[in-house]
Structures are given as structure tokens and as C-alpha cells.
Length: 63
Image 1 (cartoon, helix red, strand yellow):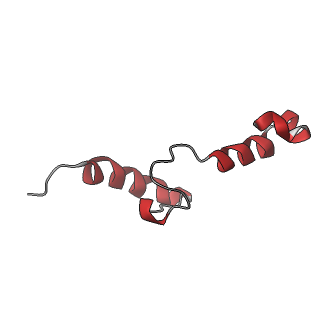
Image 2 (image 1 turned 180 degrees about the horizontal axis):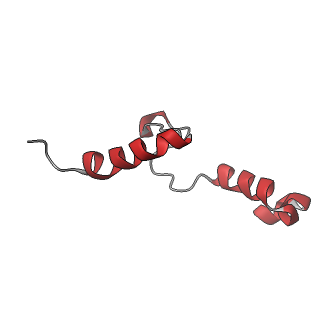
Image 3 (image 1 turned 135 degrees about the horizontal axis):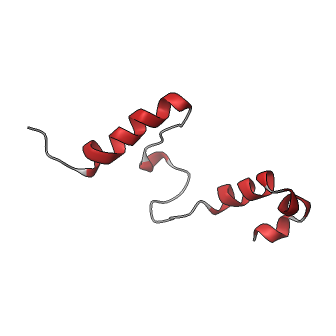
């Protein structure tokens, strides 16, 4: 019997359900950041600018 752990109880389940909808799974060791960086600041800032017209007009508001 396989040992119950986070990979086989949560991560794999979510990965398998999300990938058919276009979500890309990237293993932690292949990320463009270190594993101790919790927030992807550049990605969040870019999304704020792209999705919010007020911030797009004044990108410094995203800081």
C-alpha cells in the first residue's frame, strides 16, 4: 500500500484536474524563483496592470 502524503493526496489530484483546462504544471525545481519566495511579485504586478484600467493608466499604483 502506498504511503499517504501530500503529493498523492492533494498535489497530484489538483494537477490532474486542472491541466485539462490549460493550467500548466511546473515542478518546484523548474520554477523561475526559489522555493522560499512565496509570492510571484512580477507576475502579480503584471496582472494588476493588465487587468485594471486605473492601474494600467498609472502603473506605479501596482507597487
